[in-house]
Image (tube, rainbow, N blue to C red):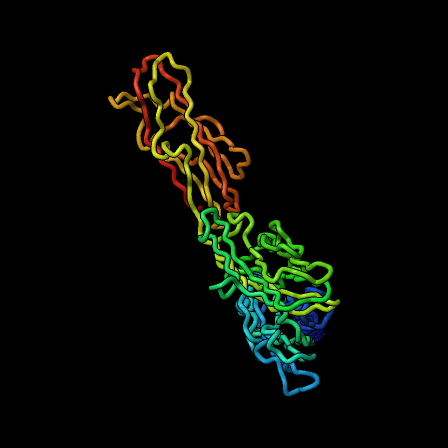
Length: 466
């Protein structure tokens, strides 16, 4: 009887263990979903939105790795002529930095949407994550007009678990307008360029500029507008991005129509850059000049995007095409000392024992766009001494760091300390490594036994990344 009770307990325990296993498998979360930047469930691309971003979200509590592959369930075909497809003109780019844990395999530059493309691989722990892909249509003006439909499928596959694959199917709709009159207005980079290229190295003040030339080739019987938009993020290959408000444009040479003639941020959405007169009269040619706002706030790197141009006339919008945008932000990491003659020494001239306190102020400025914190160190190479070798004890010679208006970083010598030989940390930047400036104030108290003369100390300042 006792053995029978033990046997029942063992069986009951096994049932509980097995039930627990099945319950865990039944309730494990393993799912893939998506959302579009403009809402809805269909990826719709047209002359106004020829590029749209899609955010994919993965839920996984199995503790196992997974991958996501992209499949073409149905290529984008013309409804009226199914033999015509968009082919490699349907492209995708990865938004680097939009994922936290895994490896987003799609590069930040446009590549054709391909079948069975490996999109994403999780970290070894299979951590839940999300990422952004930007789907676009390129060569709009060269494509056969009409409506195109197709379907892509992103498949969430388990790598080391018994979960079943999960499909996220996206219906794609593309409208290529019949813009027979689009050649009436053309937009092209300035002569000698293949795209809009902004480079800080082209300008002493780090504010590069580039031009797009707009040519109006025909006459209009009524008013029209020329518009632009930034449909894709301005992003570098390593995932850094620039806010569109940092990209400015202006038109200086418009004489007939109404143009934006003050530096204005380029918007992600459609914005008017030029308007004709009510009777349709307009400048035959004008130049849109693009520049960077506050270049030192931009982290060094090469950034890419596109600017899309549109013509609106008689209530109809016509696609004028897009120009590639490239921003080459050169590395800047330098220190400046003012006054310049005190870069390597601190001098006190014509000292006498009866003199009161003598001050010597140095302004230190740092230009940096590395996006990493840095520090400034003082290195005293020699004691304060005269040409005859007379030395002033360190206790009479002090240093202090002070704010210079809008100093952002951390002053490390807030109170006076003696100037000793060797290194002293003066300043640490903010966490972003922002460009900054601060004051270093040296004070000398003349001792009673001071021998009159000129005294100096060799001091250098070192800028280093942390």
